[in-house]
Image (cartoon, rainbow, N blue to C red; front, side):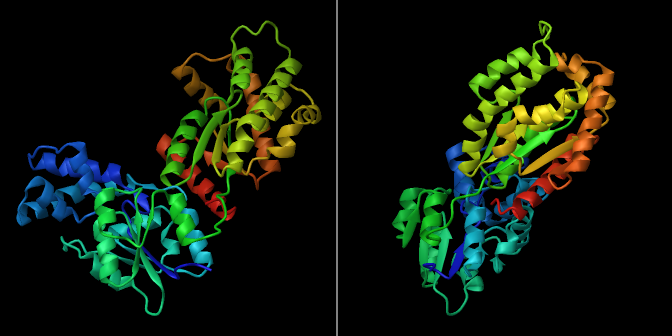
Length: 427
């Protein structure tokens, strides 16, 4: 049973960490007005209260100047700043769990309502809320209690969750319990002085208070595959950042490598002077490094609820040592038995690109390693082998057109991956 059947959340500093966007937009507005940039500790005071109030209090502006500052702030915030946001870890899982148990959920925020709705929609959170209340773009001074009343349902035991003293006072003015999110932007002494009913120093603690018995987060194992030069490493970094922005805990890793023993094997495998390494030895070394990597890094991280992004996995052995080197697929599967028994990916992002174009891009960027020097016929076989795997397991592979700008590749890959994670209940 839930302690509250209606939970009203603040947005900035409670559901999302918007410090970066707010700070950069505030600096932009002040520079445009020819005003000095306050020190970091003062800029942090802009996180939470209505923007005009902060301009007047911390920058000594008049009402008219604060209105001008707000307009300039929005000049950067509307096209760029609102996406410079990050969902706090476990928030998505908390909202999902509360909604599944029948709770009424709402947002009451000093951020303009239209912008708040767009932020919640972009990060996939809007679906959980029954109502959102925020000021319109012309209202410079929003009263928190009034915003709460707009979304407060009748006949339910409600709590207001927020990170600053104004959130707590607003909830108390409405006669409901309050929960202080001390991980947010408020000064602890000020927030606690407002005497909240409850307080949480972490999102994990907030989950325990609002949704007792909530399940631990579910992890996922995601691999990235494709021919050499298709941009996997670039995309792994971009996807890790995007996933973290959406509230996931991410672990990036690679093959061969990912842990000390496997990294030593990597040095042997990719050395330009291979000492006459035969295909069987190459395959066995990859399998040995992978077994260690799987046991030491991948499986423990997934069990902790993390999203593991791995640049190459067993598919690459099937492609490079099987399809390209001509070794038996059955034998490769046998020596990689741990990977097939325990490490089947939840999703594989396959970055599709003609091998000729991918290699040209790869060679223009840096010196090729031993495998990348294998010749055009070898790489043509790897492309064909990847296509074969994709046709055989379309339910696991998420094909991405890698022959476009990196930003568009990231968008396409993330959209598919986020949908897959949501389908699998990975929150």
